Length: 94
Image (cartoon, rainbow, N blue to C red):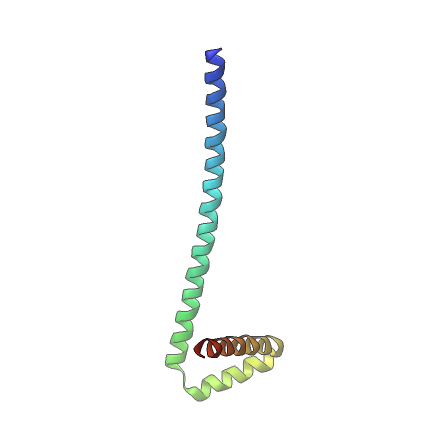
């Protein structure tokens, strides 16, 4: 009887350990994905900062015009989003 109980407890611990390993692996994978996303976003911001430092305002304006002509719907959506953020920040100030 005692051996049966010990065997069942041991099996339960093994099942729990396996479940914990699987959960830890999933969490590690998601953490890596978030970390990769963060690094990608940081690199994008760094590239944008370098571009703005190295490019004249007139050239930036021409590049923006070209992007808007090439992607008008996305440009409109981006402008609406920026407008929303601007309005929201103004509302917080008052």
